[in-house]
Image 1 (spheres, rainbow, N blue to C red):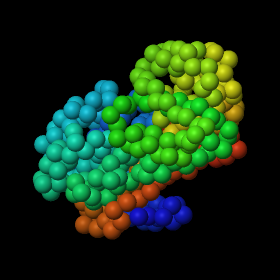
Image 2: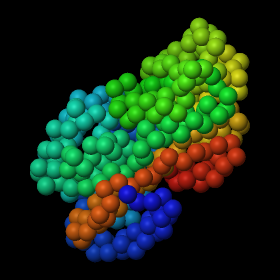
Image 3: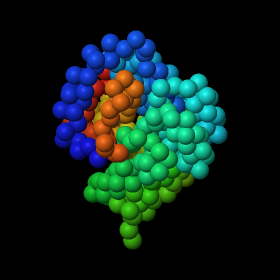
Length: 316
């Protein structure tokens, strides 16, 4: 496991490897298949991290994802990527039961695989070289403890991807950190459609007047939820927190419309695996850490401005 305090130094050190890759006659070709749509603000930052690393390592990176959260479709995309015989494969693993066979097939085909974002507990078992992401259960517990400390008694969790095991870990972790005799949690399934999510949240607020805390499991749910809170005159009265960040989330933090965000530094989740795989393909060497933690860290109204520069990199 790579300690976070060494991460900045480590990334800088990696840049020393970049000139070596430009000597290669053939560009490394790396496939990236995730469960997140490229149009999602979270995954745009992941993809842009990969694009930056591709330019620095003179690699070709192809990003693939299903049009919506569809795990069988994602498995087919992994199979197609494996059939194209890339030099390396990057995958997220939101559900090993659906995706495990396809990932094992990549490993069996001697394609080096790195998992990112989700799949920490099964990555090594599937034969991946390493996992890059955060421990979602631990992140959820810290979020629950923090929400409880804010005085929230009745919280609702907005789940935009039912069936995503990483999000289930966040929910379970939040329950562990928050629930008690006087602290209660409900889970509200929502869709990724902005207007539909906004309507669902607004209806919930109107129906359950006791709710005083709201947890969005991603910006794609938090942004319409914030609009629903504004519509109902509940901004600040119902305390909102969110996992992961986007430009809109950082702006809302600056306005104190959101209490805190849990950041897993998704730009690094796109950037680091490309750097590692390109170096592995070219030189046969790779870190011997099977887990690199990129989060969690808390973004609050007090430190939100510090992440603006990173977001500008993510959306260059």
